[in-house]
Amino acid sequence: MKFTRLSLCIAGAAALLTVGVTATATHTWNNYHWARTAQNFPLQVVDSTTPEWDGELAQTIVDWSTSSSLNLAVTSADDSSRTRQRCPAVLGQIRVCNNTYGNNGWLGLASINLDSNGHITQGTAKMNDSYAASFAVQAERDHVMCQEVGHLFGLGHTSEDGSSQKTCMDYSQDPGSTRPNSHDFAMLADMYAHLDSYDSYATGAPTGSKGKGPKSRSSAVAGMNPMAMRIRKGVFDEVWAQPDGDGGMWVHHVTLAPGFEHTELLD
Image (cartoon, rainbow, N blue to C red; front, side, top):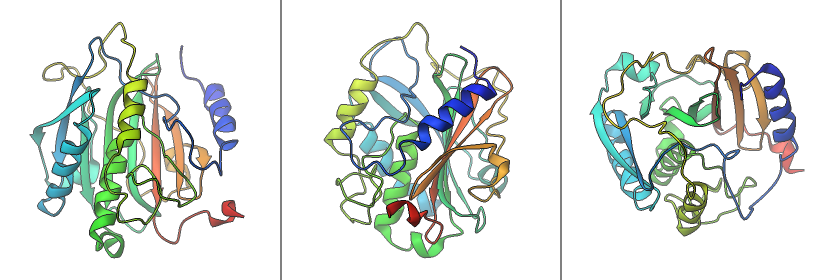
């Protein structure tokens, strides 16, 4: 199917109905997933983090690779200031970046590109160093890195009310919620139990990638138009979507910075 403005509006209406939901048996992100023709697929990671974040990225790669569904490996690196600011996506891969993106309302930003079949084809995860006070706590650094990368596989949250499920995919301040748990791995196994007719990940060096990445501006304030249409407003997060011009769309998951939470939704 082709993604249209109408389909985005419908998706937005459905998403808004779920605001306020707490822990559930499943936590997929709208059933988004990579297409692949074999189990336990390899996913290449472009490292665009500074040395201050290398340890968190390395741990996240080890942790998520424990899954029987995928294997992560850093295959290239570019931590230049310009690259980290732009954080351009690479077709068939994921890129992880950090930079001072500004006091714009978001602490972490995960963006995925969906093709016309709805499969993930590329993704980026950004850590916003402008909120240095939040990242002064090691547990929060680990939590945000693990969660933003987890979104790039198609995982959602195990809770959205601040409660702890002892996983980085919850929204708690629990220092024990910094890594994936067995439920996350079971969810991935369920999401990737079937095979597809093609691979949307890179099986070698990607070719023909436009490298244009998400059209959202890294200086965009969460809740503003540069990320196109907001289709979800949660207590601690927002989701935005926009057509990519090629029959698919970009979907952006925003982890809100302290002070920008929609606490009225807890009432």
